[in-house]
Image (cartoon, rainbow, N blue to C red; front, side, top):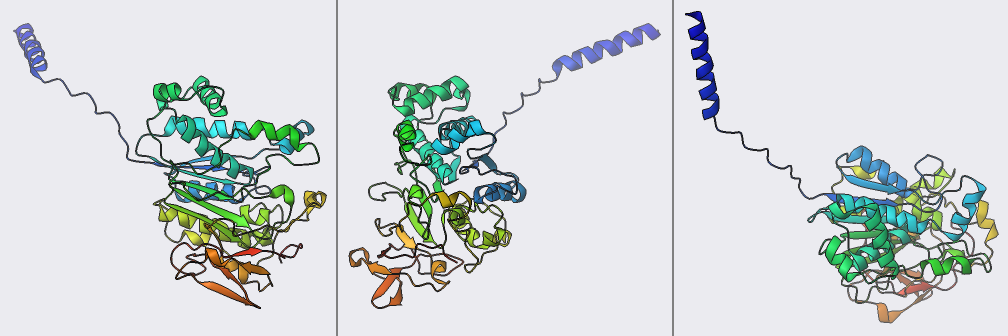
Length: 398
């Protein structure tokens, strides 16, 4: 009797199990749009406290305060031993910096995501060139983002091969770049000692650092008081770019002040934070989510000392000239540049003046157009510069 009951129970279990509908396969995991922020540092820039720049501070801030952000940090060229000296002098590692960032982005980007590229000095050149590479070649789809294809994409960018067939076979149909942010882009990728620059220039002639049609917004912070000719800035030409908004704003300070590359001169950090806060404000206006009160992480002071341009290696660069501003209608001078109260001799360019502009009168017929900023006040909208420096003092601000 007991055996019969056991057989009946087994029979019932078997048929009940057969009649149960099969479970539906799990739905594939999906995610919403993601903002990818790629941060490319300048020469010798790194994340340790002694070498951190504004680029590193932004990375550290986003990782700590915005943990869900998709953030990439590319350190600048480093000098650890004497064989690295040629990389630093000639900028020979910039190409690798761009390729690494391109590969990282290709593995993570999905249609509907947004791309923010931000860099300082040579890293700013790299960020702009990365945008140019995406414009010219396209961005690899994730399943195509192999080391071999990244190398092939670079060869197409160099102009060795025509990119059309490669783009169609391996890349997204379209890839828009929401923002390119640059802290004082320099024209020289290598240190231009006499004759030595001829060895590095041919390696970078193919780079496209312009604002292409795929870039929606471009923001450039520039050093008003930098005089070293080797650090000649590389500005955008804003005409016929198709970008919705381009701002190139001059701030008080030298090259290191604009990018926050201060060494042990941390007293200059509040001055360096002014362009940093300005840049993050621009990104936030475009929808990059930042925590409430984030500005408190970056205290600013327009009267803080400048790091200067004559310290350390700066003494080797005797060829100097004041920077000229006002060559492009997207340029303006930040309000805080005037708070230190220095006399700046500026010549007005009236044909760049527009209606409703706010002009700072400096006396003796001198004036300059001011930029708009949330923290420092200013007129609404984007205003072109109407002045250019003709007799800036050669010494550093302070």
